[in-house]
Image (cartoon, rainbow, N blue to C red; front, side, top):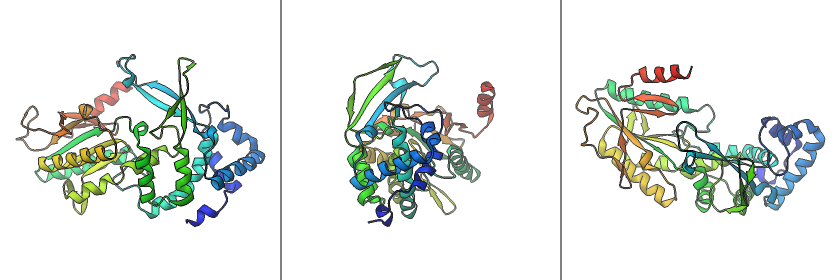
Length: 349
């Protein structure tokens, strides 16, 4: 048993977590906001401390923490508003639950760090990492091969309905393997059971329904639980011996949570990695949307755009070959020209 498991939650931990809450956020059925807790002072933090310690002792999530409100947000643009796939589901949970999960995360983080989780090639939700560091790593890796007169292949995939499609049994298994055990593991298990949700759209609530999979996108721990679900894919790819190598760094892939890129100096290497990704996704009930995926070829005059001799696929679905892609919010051209990126930014001004 981790020694932190036996230590009661203190008022200082509660106050620290409350201070990190953002003002003006949506609230749910209990009508409690972050501002209530902040302006409530010591009297509120004292009672919250008692509630949170009861949760830890009983190892049972309150039913009030398991009630979610799903708000569909339109992705914008010229998309069809009648197509459900053009909406992003945001799960709004209790502000009291968010404070508790901030405290729980603070206690789990040393365990994550000790077990080197997440992997260094995962750039999402890690301290001092972002889409900027992911795009920088991608561009520098590609430039390294081009400068050495070699072409390099990159595939880009998105994990469809990533947070909402997480297989809970598989997640609990993986959390155990990265060191989350005992009381903390049982609390997380309880938090994923008997979840009830309703949809709020155009001012109307739907009937409640039970959720049996997924971690939602409104919980404090949801992003880290998703990272745990896909973390061991990276060492599995490294063990293949495929992918890009820059000096002593092996870079078969770069991940930003559910946005993934796979990089290889050879076609066979890229195909082998995508085969591994397909098998991994099937085993752990993940869904990569190959129909929206694509691949690019950088460098090498003999690999001109439009040549159809390249067959890159995932689970039998061919990936479209493109000359530019938006990765990590940055436009990447197959010749690494910045004109398209600059033009795109100027149009937004």
